[in-house]
Amino acid sequence: MLTVYSDDHRLHFGQSELVDGKLQPCFEMPSRADTVLARVRHQEIGEVIEPKDFGLEPILRVHDAAYVAFLKGAWARWAAEGHSCDMLPSTFPARRLRRDGPIPTALHGQLGHYCFDTEAPITAGTWQAVYSSAQVALTAQDHMRQGANTAFALCRPPGHHAGSDFMGGYCFFNNAAIVTQAFLDQGAKRVAILDVDYHHGNGTQELFYERSDVLFASIHGDPLVEYPYYLGHADERGEGEGAGFNHNYPLPHGTGWDGWSAALDDACRKIAAYAPDALVISLGVDTYKDDPISKFKLDSPDYIRMGQRIAALGLPTLFIMEGGYAVEAIGVNAVNVLQGYEGAA
Ligand code: OKP
Ligand code: ZN
Image (spheres, rainbow, N blue to C red):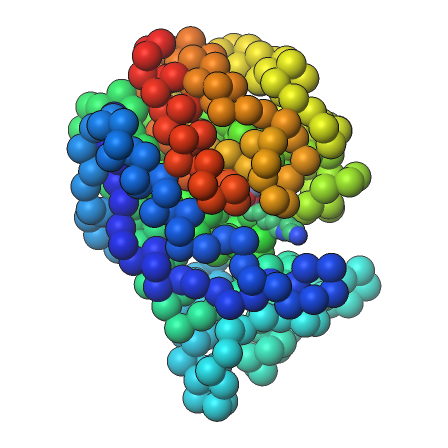
């Protein structure tokens, strides 16, 4: 399987996120991608290539132009105000404030407008890193457009919490959504997204919630007790044209392979019935038993089984790297999914 990777991910290295009332080192750090890349090479799963540049157009098919412009210009404006530390918002338009009112002109007001939490710092290199992460995903997608049955986009930072016009949860551009839209723009009639990251892919859900050309299925920690808290319940089934094309599998803390794989089986049945032209996997491995911010109990061999079950669908499959914070284990776990898939495909 081809892997697409760019060193540019290093340019995004947030100093801290707000955890339990304290600023703590970011869990989402450059060594995550290094570990996965090292494992890809060690297991010799295939060639590793640099991304091509597809420009902003495919990103703007998914993200709001004003949001993209904000992200591109934010650091220069912040620096011009005399700051050199990371940007983190502290004020948000919650209920009965005007979230769709006039966008503040002040940088800090815009930051709260375009971000939903305090866990996605913007740094000097964030724009280049997230732009390249999207190009990594698009290059893997292009490889499949040219006929490959599968590819691995080693994206960092991740993307599935980012929506049309907001960032958050370590995410800025929604790489899975961007490649999904690219498949559709190239003639696919239906694309399915299976999000196996521990956290609900709220951004991806939002982007396709009213559409029938994308089926979204997500297996994740129950939002009653888990980040991102305000989306990801089982009764969210899609709206309008999209009614019936969104499937959430919220699971309790402590879930291991038995409970998790039952949800996977159900999601796979729904995907098979949908008969998509392509499948996009939001591949987070923060379901691992030793993940520092998660509460599921999957073990490394389970990721091989996960890849095998996905392969049984018999679909062209694009893997997009999302979360996973047990840095020493995420290489083994992510590549286990890919090798499980390839061994069974
Ligand atoms: C991004 B992805 C940490 C709380 C969790 C945000 C998690 C974002 C995960 N104490 N904060 O879905 O892996
Ligand atoms: Zn996650």
